[in-house]
Length: 558
Image 1: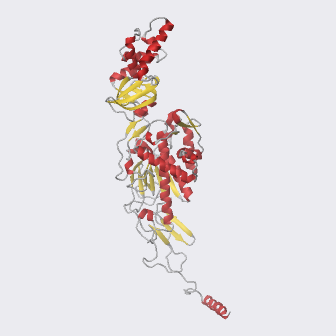
Image 2: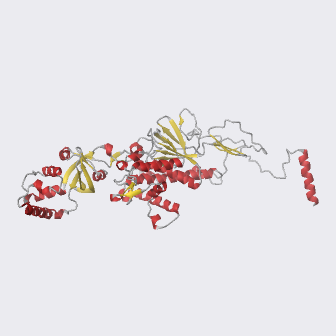
Image 3: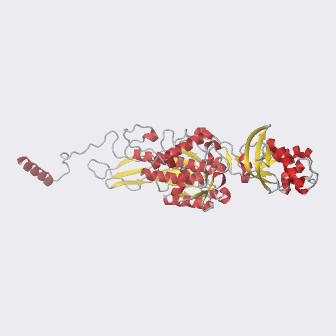
């Protein structure tokens, strides 16, 4: 039995474990799916923190153009959609337009509901319901979950395809597997060493609050913890880079909120945030709006207006005071027509200068990781290291708020889980009667020759083992196992067989035929001849030979 090892028990890792197990079941293959999580207590802790504890699981309007490295994501989502259609065996519009990740959650029993801007949440409105169905499904499918296992390094098999992957953990143990899925997220991606040329780029926190310079902070400190709605533009050298409409939260160090989180993916020190408090009014209509408003209010009150009175009902009082001060105006001043351009500029373009990310602990993702150019978008498999997959945030892919990042975690986990299971299932079919073509490159009709050599990189155990050479019992990768094929069935052993093997002689029903790294008692180059039913009478008693002769004579007489 071979092993699929999944490093990381977050969103992508749990989905990969479920999908790998389902794919193996559908293929009728048997393999060991093991999930290793660094958290000492449980898996899925990162899922519980998403969506303020509600888990914004996906979005009703998923589009590849929302993601960094758009072309890679577009191809990946397309391949996942095709796999889903092939699995369902239907071509109805509902199947063609379905969200494969959401459909898999529906299979697991999760019900979702849609909120504003297409955000999808679990019906129970708690992230625990998402984690519960993932953990329950993984347990029901037999996934071996191990916590407090922080992986430090993954060693590839030998260049000729022999051996297996070795995963080295911080607790000095080693696990072995036929396929490895790295789903450790952005925070830990730089802490694991993968086979060359897979090198993790610097990870930068994004999708978080922004810090502003000292001059701008004078205003944000006055408005600390006050929320407003509007549009925020990101400008660099007078050029507009991006715009986001939504909530803005002032903080003592800068600004936060969903709109700022999304802009933080593009912001650089020195950029300007331009706040538009009245995004529904076009700039060319602002002066007319202001004069009309002033005329109506003066007609009702029967007298002149002060600036603070004019802004009542338009902005919060604290925001009015801070904005007027930044525009060089005072609240008690009488509102005159000459002040209209200044007020328009303040309401449509209050400027704040960016210094960088504010509170890194609030950032939802990390930008960077392993470059997508080294991976196949159809499977998330490394092009240079077959059998090694990287998913989720560990790849250099990120997206705005709204369920897009979690959707990528589910989708990439499904792609890798399917592909890893297919790889192991093909290997199992080959080892049952064909040459190991997919792994070693040998022709399909080549004869397996017994070998007494074992891979120097494999200790024979797929369960974690200590560095001192101890081996644990369990399923083993092809090439690291010893199978004794006997008359009463096949028996698998970890390491070397502790029982004496029966010598293989012609006519002996207990002859052993070993494969992979096991020994064979047949002489090399002299395969056993098939026995003929009318020959090889040696070994029979005289009475048996006489009885056979008498029966043959009677048959001839007839």
